[in-house]
Image 1 (cartoon, one colour):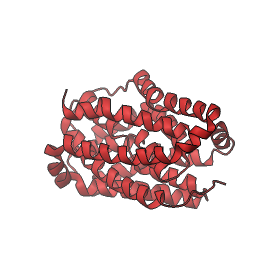
Image 2 (image 1 turned 45 degrees about the vertical axis):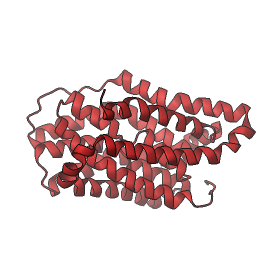
Image 3 (image 1 turned 120 degrees about the horizontal axis):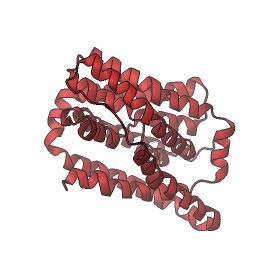
Image 4 (image 1 turned 90 degrees about the vertical axis):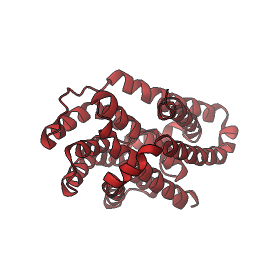
Length: 292
């Protein structure tokens, strides 16, 4: 097993599951019922992730004149909504964690249906030589969400309910641990992909940076336009701009059997950690705010 495979299949999922456990200890059931009663933020986030992000990716591929392989690679990235990493960043940014988790879970399941449709069109439009039927593993995707996200968070919420004082004491240490793990994962990603980072940045560095900033900007502007509270605005911003790079790599290398299509994801992963890290630093030092 290569270093990159070791990181993506073992280190990253285990680390994120631990962080999800810590997040669960900050949540109570009313955090989710409040979202269910007022689903505006969820609808905004899902619209950004499932509709506008692929449109932005498609537009940028044309504007930057990417070759077919890189264009499809960029579309793969744009169709993969935020994974657990976006939940981690939201936690440190002191955003609405329940909203972030809800968006991740729903978008990940729905994208199993939207990704094949969008990528089939992209392959045809850009004239890629890849002639395959795109079928994502629905059961595996749902199991991944359950194991990495839902189960650890549920356990954390049970700890919060029955060991409330302990859970409250652990809030700050877990936020610090989240930051440390984020940094370690960033270093590990760079180390594992050191041989391709240079060429990836040279070939698609600028367009992936624009994609990252544009999608985060979209999240921020739509949140403000629809007058979401501050913590929910942070969540929608992060969820709109942080993509599931692991899923994108799997689609490119395992389903489409084209490692080159994973190059945009490699470049984007660097920018994602840089901009995500900035948000964690900027919002993480602020005092906690109360959602409306």
